[in-house]
Length: 259
Image 1 (cartoon, rainbow, N blue to C red):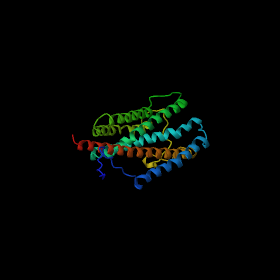
Image 2: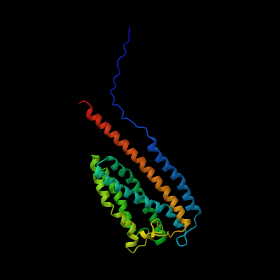
Image 3: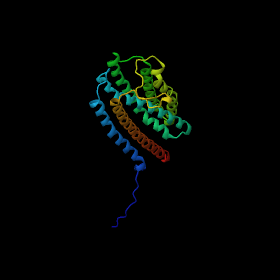
């Protein structure tokens, strides 16, 4: 008896194509990870262990090394989301919407942690957990804007509709960023003014009013937290890209399958 081999017919759907990450994609991740690993522990050691207590605030000033970087991240990410939203509305390319979608939860977390540490700092300095101060209120509005972006992005069955609504909301919310920055100059406020000035005097900046014993740890912590946040945003972006490609693949199979 001769056994004839029969052709194998698979009833399962083919798996979606996978792409191995290239060096052009992975090297920024490694660079950001190295920056976070090198600068964040060093900055935390200098800020929490070796730096002296502040003359008026004492040990509570060490909250600054976490509070200020969280504020920087929250403001930077929302500004980047606004840029990505404008590019999405102009080009309708999903990558810009995915960029905003990747940053929104991280920015919301940074804004929440900024408010939380600011509340702890304010209770020790002002004797109150919360005051309706211009800087605090505008930062709270930023947190709500982040929450609104996350909700709108996932409120529609069609991703394009959610992306469009979130992009419009992000652009409208950009007006809150200058309010946060200039609130300590526009209104009488309990929140202290900026002690770190990076702009030249002609542009409204000048020499930093912060002692180097506090400035160096703050900059190191800021660089470390920023690198970590951008690293997480890039990882989320690639994850969302893979998820979108997978959904498009199975949608194509569904429409191509015989009824």
